[in-house]
Image (cartoon, rainbow, N blue to C red; front, side, top):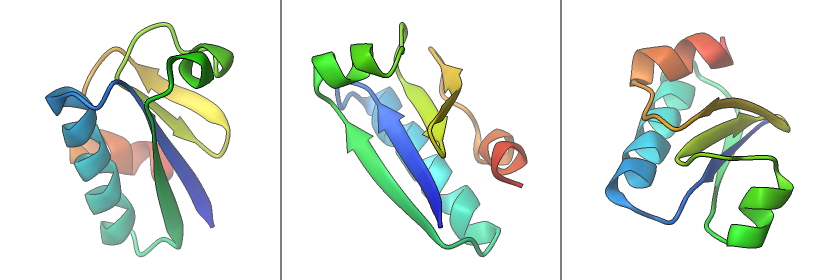
Length: 77
């Protein structure tokens, strides 16, 4: 199971990153879960300085930008 977390306020960019992450995981046929983290303290505790951010299996893989589906797929593969 791949654990994917999206950190952000829930803005349009955060929503788009979550959509791209889900589409990429589905495209790879992965068993995954996606969690959207909007709590500011949880975001800070995760070490995220800029949102939106993408965490995969406990490691922040991207922050401050919306990755395309292809970019997310390369991080998950």
